[in-house]
Every structure is written in structure tokens, then in C-alpha cells.
Image 1: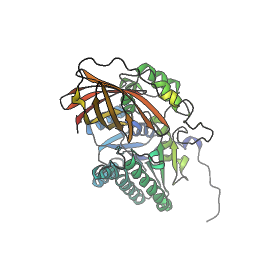
Image 2 (image 1 turned 90 degrees about the vertical axis):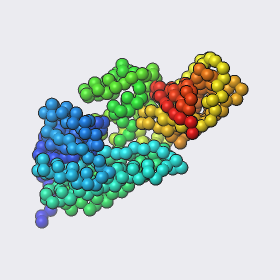
Image 3 (image 1 turned 60 degrees about the vertical axis):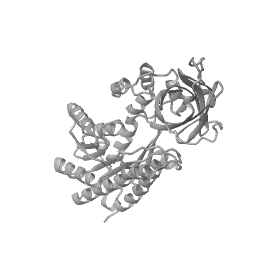
Image 4 (image 1 turned 135 degrees about the vertical axis):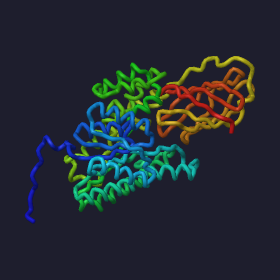
Length: 424
């Protein structure tokens, strides 16, 4: 075979996916939904999967209404038989398979000491085993069909940098990075590329909803970030409650002045799925706006604009509830609080001494002391300061005791987060 420098492809076809067929897992919301959108816009036929059939069917109807050639398929990626059925469905409907995007993931929180076997196994079943076997099944189909292909797996920054409350998730995603590189070696002779994409902090609809930000502020924030053209109506509509500091906090904590958006990831995935990346395999594209970079010129306290002074928006403690002192609050309580990163377990350990409420609370592997606490028959309130890495955030807890149940809110720089708990 004669040596050649190759013939460059026509520019206007480099990002086209016309004639290609893709599977996108977890495609009914967030990043996965935006990947489906970009693929369909590029001309691909797309099968997107997920566990919830009503959500899948609703999104399918939405996409078809936009003129996209897509189909949903109910599938649990942790079940290999489901993945086999998804591949078979795709080939039967569209005649081939060219692209797989492993986006679906399980995202449990827990430190090493608090981890359970059940949580660990569930996480690995989806993020590691499930992703691997679907990649294997897709590769086998591509090889059988005798054409090139693209496999794109999602990683996490937790796989690259130790993150204690995400020990299972990070370990599972590190396994994905290993088999991504190994499959890239094995499948290269078949012209099948295997790559990874790693999101930084990404503002999905679910995260905005959990943040509870102010609608007008978030609208302004999105537009200032140059993303006014995105379909954000549903996203903004999900925002409720709020805090005046949310926009400033997001802008000051990110090197580029904003978080990532699903479309930032979708564009990177489109690049890897297209002919633009036909000779790229075994790499990890980190899409985080430089969030993960370490700057040696940076002050020890962290990045500019996110020092203790800026993040520690110390809440004012009012006179608190009135009434007689309530000793019933004393003891340990296990509660669930909704945070910007999902539901988290929080442990309150309260002591009622004299006219004061003291103790600790712990969340995501971090413990904080109760400060300026009061507990009466009308409710309880206190301040707290939780340190995470080099930064810390102050919050105010306000709640009430009803029998063996407690409920209330934790107010911090990212908004008010409700909690409910039971006595341990």
C-alpha cells in the first residue's frame, strides 16, 4: 500500500451525522437530552433510553414535534439483558448502529466509612458493569455490520480527584476510564473509536431546581453567560424560592464566570461522534471551563472571589422561637436534606443545656458545631459552619419537633434546603 497524506474531507460534512444511528442512555433529561438534540440536529436517527416510560414517551413526543427522527426505549442499563434488547430494538428500527453514548449513571453519596455493600453494588452495576457491557454489545454490532463506529463514555471529576462523599461513584467512573482506554486499543483495528467526556459543575434543570434560585436572577445569569439562545423555559420555570447571593456565588466561583450547561457537554460529544474526531481515540475531554485546573499563583484560601469572606454569608440569628425550653430535642436525628447535588443524609446530634441548644451536625462527611442554638416548645434554631476542603460555608438551621420527627430548613449561600428526619 502506497504512503499517502490522505484527502481532507469536505468542510461542510465534518460535523454531519446524516445516515448515522445512535443510542444515548439517560436521554430524557439533562445532558443526555441535549446530546439527543444535537445528534438529531446533525442528521442522526437516535434511540434514547431510560427507566421511566412516561418521561421517555413525553420527551419522544416533544422531539418528534420538532421534526427529529428519534425513538425512546425503556431500559435499565444495570441489566445486561435490557441493554441487549436496546441494541436489538435500534437495529430493527433503523437498520444499523454507529454511535453509543453511555450517559446514564447512578450517583450515590457516602463516605468510605459510611458506605454499604448495597449502595456500592448498585453504583457499580450502573456506572461500571452496565456501561461496559452496553459498550461491548454496541461494538459487537458495529463489527458485525462491518463499518466504523463511535463509543463515548461519561466520566466524572470524582474519578480523577478523590472526593470522599462520592467514593463509590468515583471508583466506578475510574473503572469506566480504564475500560475506555482498553477498548480504544482493542477496537482500533475495526476503526471504532472509544473516548470519554468529563463534565465539571453543570447546571442541569434538576440542579437548578434543587438550588431553589430566584427566577429573574437565573434568567439574567444564563443570558449574561451567552446562552440566551438555549431552550431554558422549563429550566427557569422549575426554580422556586431563592436567595440574593446565588448568581454572585456562581459567577465568582467559576473561572469563566459561569457553570457548565448541558449544551457544553453535548457539543463536545457531537465533536467526538463526528468525522472531526475520526482519528481520536482513548482520550478524555474535560468540559469544565478550567474548574479542575490548579493555579500556583492562586492564594491559599482558594480561587479569587471564593474566599471565606465571600462564601461565608453569615446569617443573622433573630431572637428565635419563644416558649419554654424543650428537652425533647436532645439526642441523635437522621434526616434527609435536598441539596444542589441531590438528596443527602444529615445527622443532627443535639444537647439541650440550660437555656441553650448545643451539639453537632454532619453532612457529606463534614461535621459542624451548633452555634447560638435555641430550643423551645415552639421550635429550634441555630447557626453552623461547615468546612469543605479549603472553603467553608455558614448556614442557619430552623426547625420544629413533632413527636419523634423533626423538620425545617437549612439556609446557606445557595438558598434554603428543606429537611425531614427521625430520631435514631
